[in-house]
Amino acid sequence: MNARAHANNRDHRASSPSTILVTGGAGFIGSHACVELLDHGYELIVVDNYSNSSPQVFARVQRIAGRFVGAVYELDIRDRRALSAVFDRHSVDAVVHFAALKAVGESTRMPVEYYDVNVGGTTSLLRAMHEHGVHRLVFSSSCSLYGDAGGGRLSEASPARPTNPYAASKWTCEQILADVCRRIPDFTALSLRYFNPVGAHPSGLLGEDPSGTPDNLMPYLAQVAVGRRARLPVFGDDYATPDGTPVRDYLHVMDTVEAHRVALDHFTDGPGMHVYNLGAGRGWSVLDVVAAFREACGKPIPYDIEPRRPGDVTELVADAAAVARAWGWRPTRDLAAMCQDAWRFQQLNPSGYAGPAGSKSAKE
Ligand code: NAD
Ligand code: WQD
Image (cartoon, rainbow, N blue to C red; front, side, top):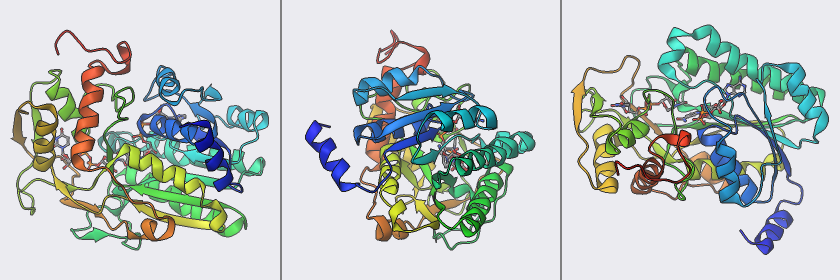
């Protein structure tokens, strides 16, 4: 973005926050958000304990955005003293809170850890914010809190029926935030319930780099296409969907982070808790995604139909009309772009961030 565009952005959000604390800013969505916010003139302070990420990502963020993330702290958000010291040192206008544990299956095996990090981490953050008079928060929530909703588009009024500790931790955080907003008159919490964010930055420098075997469909597909894994397991083809595989609402990570940038302009709409679904409002089956990825990478994707994955639900598709009405935000990137960008990242980074930035492997 050029200097003039920066100036226009600053004018546009004259009363909006300008220094943002980003928790979990080294992660998949957080790193893309750093680029988006730097591109729009924000000053950033990032905290992350790198439990699911690496500080190497910041060199790439800088390469894309053309400037540094202002300050980066390695800390656990449950460490109140360390967190408080960050607020002492910087004048924070608002917080975008990504830091959490996010693997649904793992949460069923480690429920206490999930509640501790996701709920305990959030209350630790709220305490530091409140002690420092910072009352503006964007919270990463999840469609998983709707549970097995049985099909049809899900609006924010659809009941929360979490079926695992991860989803329950997000629902608990939302309830805490709603209560904090009721008790602290100027507190504003914007809770964004993401459906399935996927894809990568179009530069190929940033993307999803899970450690170990990917839990999620898109990174697994990318690793099969690049030759790191032999075949994709497709978890069940006996669901009540057109092709028998589960349907999800996939959302490009760039659209996801643009919604966060737009959110920062809407603290001035008024205090309180506001909850919005972030989705495309359109469902794709697992086999639809396999076909789109095959198109993007130009190679067949070998797969095996395997038994259903425990805890999977048939369909999760957003009714995302509320955020479009309130903020004018709508996703603009389609499934083809999600697959092309995920594939570009995987091709350029066959070993993820551990390899040299933007290099192709000998295998390609
Ligand atoms: P991610 O794991 O890539 O990023 C989370 C970041 O938080 C990581 O960098 C991790 O190191 C950091 N972190 C974890 N625990 C921490 C702690 N105690 N202290 C400090 N840092 C800590 O995950 P993501 O996909 O970028 O997800 C970001 C947020 O969005 C999470 O809150 C997640 O629950 C939510 N979400 C993600 C998805 C998705 O499909 N990716 C969907 C819905 C909601
Ligand atoms: C998508 C579909 C799998 C891997 C979870 C959370 C949700 C959000 C995103 C955090 C499902 C199938 C997957 C594979 C497959 N995260 N699949 N083979 O489960 O919809 O959502 O992650 O908040 O809250 O619940 O995402 O990408 O794991 O799965 O067949 O190797 O792909 O069965 O139908 P999911 P996913």
